[in-house]
Image (cartoon, rainbow, N blue to C red; front, side, top):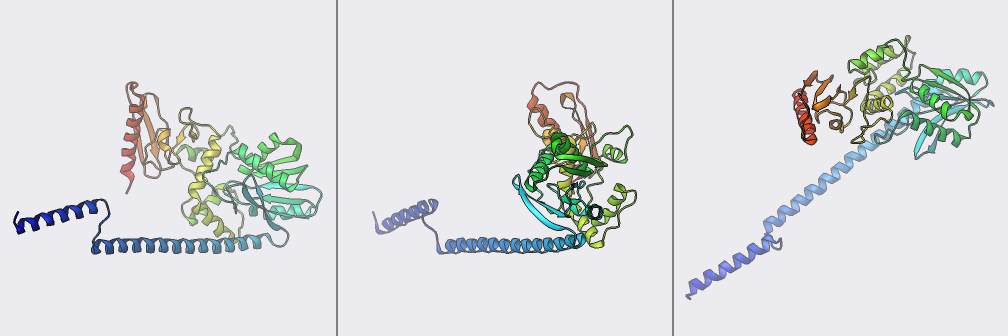
Length: 365
């Protein structure tokens, strides 16, 4: 072997060793090391910026909560004390006042809060009653957890835990809207606690006449789900024959809350409407409306909808994989008929979901 051939063979062996080490991650050039260091530095800086942004967001939320708490405290005046208590793994905020021997428990309406009882509570106070008004779980100052169940029986049990915590026995219950429904369930289940029950427009009570709300829901519309603060006045006009004269600060607070928690309130609305009715196969909540099914959360495909429908889409699946739905947010509707059942149930379901997903995607910008 000549000298040149020997040198060539040594170079080939060295290159082969470098290649093997590189493949195993045991050899990196200075340039690659610098590149890795730069990547790590960018990643660390990105994480740091995210942490700083999150800290600013938390600070902003805390400042907003303090401002809101001050607004609510001002609306109560000096007659009532703001308090909170831990029950069933959650914090419930409430106010109370009065030294009377007879207590009145006030349960507010849907997407409302305990402060809406202020003027009414002051009248009871002057009549010599002790008054307790609580933010229902999921409303007011309480945490809004989308993974928690807010059906009426569960809410009634939470209120029972609340009254036990406060040591309330032999009291009067007044409930408005969903608070009225919960008050009725509470009285039915724990009648030994209740002296009298007063219901003000209880939620989900069926009457012979078709209400304005029934008509709107049959069209797939829900006045509760407002998208802008300006729409709050329209909501008040729908709910009241004569809307209450709310202070501007309180009205702004309520409007911002309704917009910020729109999806949460709509989810809770569907849950209250459906109760604990679930699909017998998958076990997911059925989200039933007036003879229809509402798409709802990310599991909407288990209810016969596609992955790309909005949460407010409504309709009903038929035998043999037939589909009928309408989406009020995009204006798209779909009807799909079949002439029989597919022997492969999985293929039938996937076909329907695929058709729905593609149709609904036509309305996505």
